[in-house]
Image 1: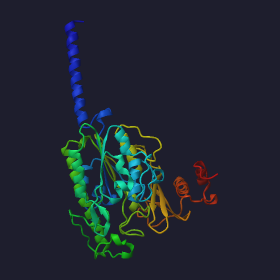
Image 2 (image 1 turned 90 degrees about the vertical axis):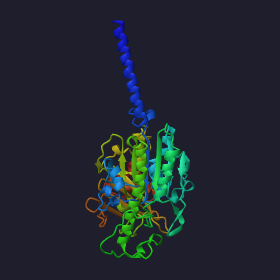
Image 3 (image 1 turned 90 degrees about the horizontal axis):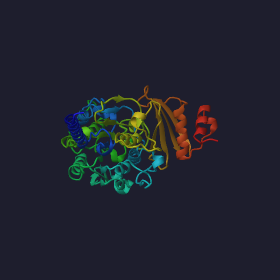
Image 4 (image 1 turned 60 degrees about the horizontal axis):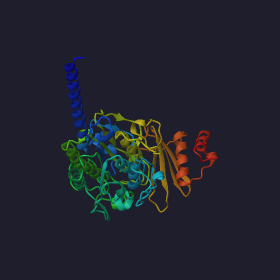
Length: 455
């Protein structure tokens, strides 16, 4: 071969190598590195306390409550049947960050610290080189309440605004929560490392009193309600019209939507948004004018309380509308997968794409009574089983087909199946309930034996 030809080929190879290297450097800096490693995507996790998906215009609600979410998540994956793991904030939030249901991670009530040996999502991301930060606005998520602060490089839990109806319960409004997140993003973030930022907004938690009315909602006719079904700290001064409570709840959503929009605007301005994974979800929903307690959560596993928004925006991924049920415990394994990291064995959650329509999704709640009664439930497809447990026994049980009765108004007869067997097994394991074999179907008895709950 002519030496000049060989030299030209070598020069061409070197030029191509330099072009490819430069292109990969640009991708890495934009968070779009296609091969994992140092170019892992930034992750933004946004949770909104007490947010119902059916009150978001993003989910088809008739009122324009979420124009900023509509704008930023129009092309995202939107899960229509997403569920919390627990009806109260601390257990649900720890499930979100661990991929475990409350019986496994151990935080089942308020002010219970997470055990040091239980690994969390920020622990795993930090070990993989991520810078981790959290900005939370609910008093029950303060560092001394859950010990989550030790799992992050930066944990901003300033909650210094007393609720108007509960002077000893503190929070931080959405505008200041976004300000704190932007301060970290612009001043403390290390651009040389991928980051995981979790921002938890307190709005629209009761009492429904938005610091600023972004959109003024009203309803045509009064809806009379029994105020005895509204907890005292939730009541609005001189308001007896249930429709006005709903108006105010929606106004809170519009308020927090504006400030989430400010956060996402900053990601775009910093050229971070297109290469980031962004998840929007909630810790739980809220009863409005429904069931035994109005404007309330924590105490039951009704869909109004347990259904949550779950919206995922990913780089170069066309959005879909998905009906397969998913759980809050699926967020941690999903984010690990999106970051190119291994999903550890032993988690209760699965990556979203691994969920099957008939998987069992577990739900739990604490009855707010003098006893320690609980409600637990299981969802599989459109079927939902539930039991109320107290005094070491099952006191109530119910079944709903959510396609036929989405409001859970008329419980049907207890329907045998894998969901019922799984629920009863979980009741026995988690709450020490004595199950009598004669009350079980042959299929359920076999399932219970396989799970080790019957001899």
